[in-house]
Image 1: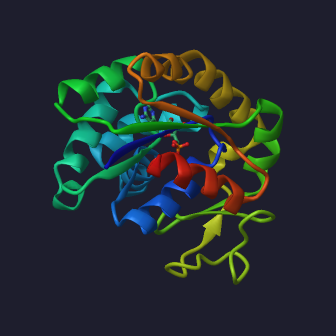
Image 2 (image 1 turned 90 degrees about the vertical axis):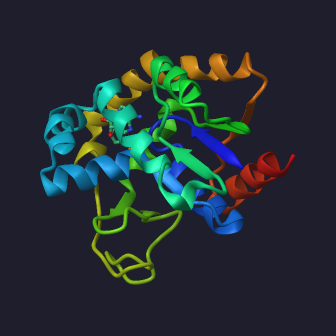
Image 3 (image 1 turned 180 degrees about the vertical axis):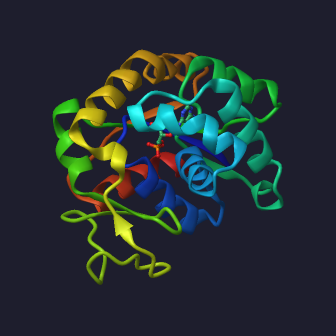
Length: 210
Ligand code: AMP
């Protein structure tokens, strides 16, 4: 099962990808997490990506496509994978097709812009493993510590309100066209992101198994 999760920043892609990953035993591939790790380690891709990420812009297609290609070639992706944050442009989606990788389903999690800002200011992400939390909707068991690995669960720098405005603009300009792209291929399922994580999970899991 090869899946794509689409949606604005803060729509819940990462959280729901974790749920599906556990349920189906296939890896979650978050290009955002891979890029943050690359920035932290100062790799060549990380150095290229840093400025774009900080300003809320997209990292150039060729950088992200290269990263994705390498990740999908790893052994744990043989049974399937969940793409969380890729593709984010039509050229990325075309590159995925050109890799000869079939996509079974694309799930778009729809959340109105007005709700995104509040969601992102409460989001916390583990610095070590990338797991996502929310102070209200999905709190960590111990404040500030990741349930999975004990790393620090922190506010991402690019979740600051002024950067979120830029990221939403980028989403509408560059990523939202993918909704029509995949609808045209008969792969798209749209769901409304719910207030409670578990309610969205139910809709997502129904969509995966339908
Ligand atoms: P995310 O964690 O998915 O919100 O991604 C954080 C940031 O990483 C984005 O705002 C982009 O700057 C960059 N990024 C992640 N995935 C992609 C992608 N597929 N294409 C371009 N930039 C990306």
